[in-house]
Length: 205
Ligand SMILES: [Zn+2]
Image (cartoon, rainbow, N blue to C red; front, side):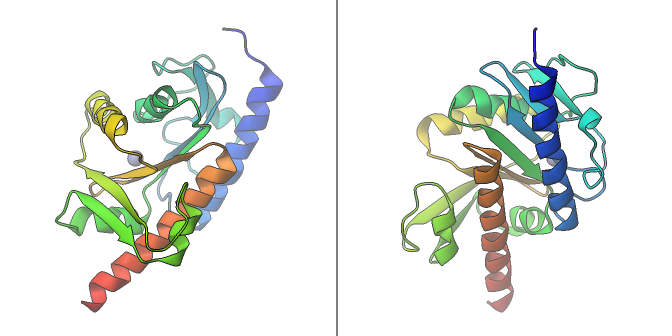
């Protein structure tokens, strides 16, 4: 596959900067998490496996095709297929962020329901298509599994019938996406704040 080194480098720099922010916010501890940006209609740039997310360098980002096969040097994360599934399911998705933030891990682990319903919070309006705090946003909670192909298939099925902006994996973390990396990061920031409200609300009950 022919690719433009300068384009990949530019996208890699953006992912390095996002990694630093996510790490400093405490959302990506101990080399966890992965981030990606669409390259074209068959490829994305994604973080290599096992890299410290606060100290990412452009060489820690690799280009993969949507089957998860590396095009450039580097070891793709085990969770690469959860990114490429999203790009294939919706061609408007331009970036995907996955973190192991404490709020996403705690809520997904301890909620007894298989979904998190967010409603009544003004910040919901930072999420796509939400115009009022009175609207509700449902975030599915999937069971954690090391079978990434099966998880990707489960997400794919859900996206056929539900208008999702994110999902949680139990005791593991969150996936969210957006048209651009900026949009995606705004969704992540909003969801993190909303999940922290929910955690506080639960502790006050
Ligand atoms: Zn993960």
